[in-house]
Amino acid sequence: MGLFHGLADQLNQKHPLYQLANKINWSLFETNFKKHYSEKMGKPAKPIRLMVSLLILKYVRDLSDENLVEQWAENIYFQYFSGEQHFQPT
Image (tube, rainbow, N blue to C red; front, side):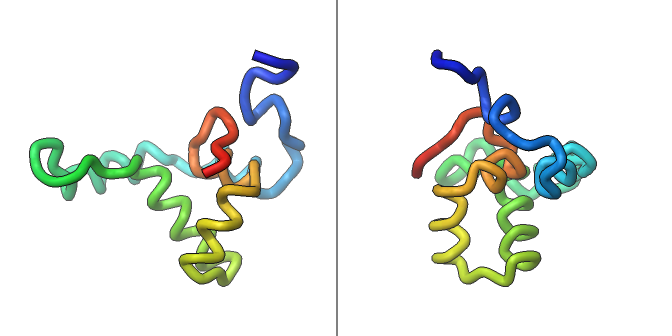
């Protein structure tokens, strides 16, 4: 398992994305958006928190879709903000 147990153990708790991730009521998005997804049709959806957080990051950082995906794969604060518990290199 290594020295750290998850992303939160590796991050500076004073970082703005760390703080914002813990202030947003993510369940509010889950509750309001899940009615627009079907578990029986099509490809399984990505987690709602991931999709909402990516839109927030895209507009706050003024990133293209391609740059957002590239930076998400490299930035542990982006990943933590998106709800990841462990670093995802892809």
